[in-house]
Image (cartoon, rainbow over all chains, first blue to last red; front, top):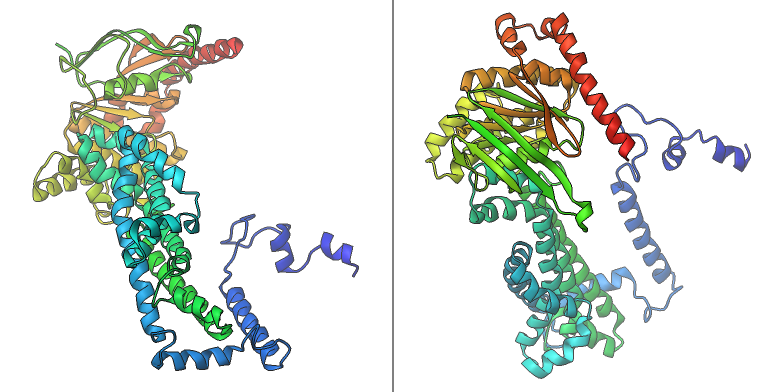
Length: 288
Length: 266
């Protein structure tokens, strides 16, 4: 069979799925982009990447200085769990980073959600908060890092404020967008059932905005992790970002990668938790 | 004394220029003395939804008088129940919580409002579905929850904005009968919008036919097909009666004429 023939006359299921040629099987929908589960493929990809990593390092094709082997990083992990590296064990570094990111996260949640909702429901609040948020939002945290140091010093407060600023803007905008996404029919229905403005806010807007707010929290915490290393760049005695930066100074590639993996894993686990919460709190998302 | 009284009601939507103004309603007058089932029918753009929004208190009329139970309207309120085209239920509440939502807003005690909700869910035939999430119900069932919800506040008038427009033909006919039964049971005045001529003739005791540009009432009919339905309980036979069909053709002619002339303007 020639290639042309194979493409123009796809007989295998996977091919027809890609090109949408054949009708869907009963119970499936025809033509849905990206139809099907990708879990198995994701697992295969991850295992393959790990295997390639293991292969190129163990065979000595890449020098450990550039890329240490996975097993050597595993050994370093166990080692650093009990011995100090740059002033603290791995868990202590992790605890400090978790403390900074989550303190910043909760401060940002506490401010961004009321302010974002306020911006959504009130033109005065929108007029007040829109210019400053839209002004600083696109500036990378590294850009205003020096300013936070000049203003707040080099204590934990400065680090937490820097991370909180990075989380605040996307979350406030998500809450504001959430208010806009509430259906006007639901608001009209509540008014025609005798609701006052406060009840509309309490019973309709807050619930209706919830999916967007939760999505905003997921995006926000992501910004928090991205900003962590920048926050721990200056005068930190501990923390995963500090650990990575110190290791880089000593060209200790194993610990650099270890730190990166730690941050990645924690962020991923937290995102899974947020998705679970989202599923529990707003099971109706996308269904009405 | 009348339940509903409109006199020279006019609604003008402002355009960017004076000549762009849209006269959605032009000097509409209507008096309904009793518990009528009023159906507004007309080509698109005839102002029937605007009229409902004025009655609901969502839109302020540009000029004219509007009295419900001899009271002027100043904004939406629980004395007028609205059933929407897109049910507008709250997906974070289950069926019975949605139904009792209006009473909760009015501060009625939990037990009392639960009892009222149970009664009206029974009336619309959803007694088995109290704890279902509303997003798992079919379109017809969702509309029934919307109807029960509007009834719990015991409004003077039920305003229904094409409530059956999104349903399939069979569900639609079942719902027509259900709504008529609910109307007879509760003795509410109903203001019902549709663009189905058959539905309008079958359900109305008072049919108002509206025409676009400017939106106005051109014909009014007093009908009794729904009362015949209460006697015979056979909707199909009523809809195939010679006088029903004659009526249908007469009204269709008016509506087609409106559609045609508005098409020529464009």
